Length: 194
Image (cartoon, rainbow, N blue to C red; front, side):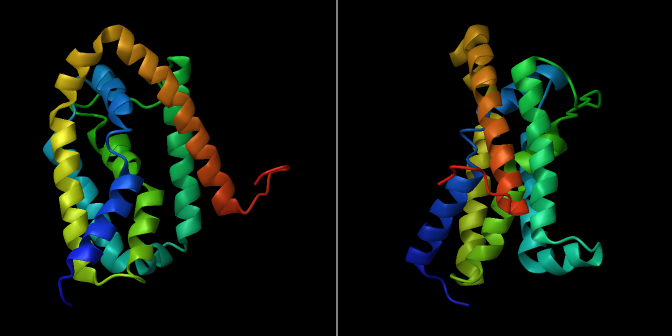
């Protein structure tokens, strides 16, 4: 196990793109609107623990329950699909009645530590040293924490109208991501798909 800056930067960039915390800001704002507050420390720690668990014992852990990575990804796609419906249709499917109700589900999982990012993390093990991946993951979690802490600032910058527009737009994006995640992991081939 030896530190390599190039490997760390490469793993960081891959994880940063897949976790896409900046792209999740409208969804986080929507959840904050419903539940009142989002616990930045709690969401970051829970997501980080999920990542670490899956990094070291992911596939065997799922195997205990008779679940493979593809099934896990499909389950995650359903949660993302429901989140998308909430945002586009202005309905409430997830109950956020507990204090910080949306912090763990759906923010920590599947928004931050989702099936795509967990699968990516596992696949990075085949290319890079574990030390470099873990450093890259830790740096990503620092960025996640900072973005979660700044949600109020984003809220002020966008205003109610901006949040409403972003909510609808990203709701459609989430629906598309859910469909793609489902199709990719079920092996369904759409006609005229490239």
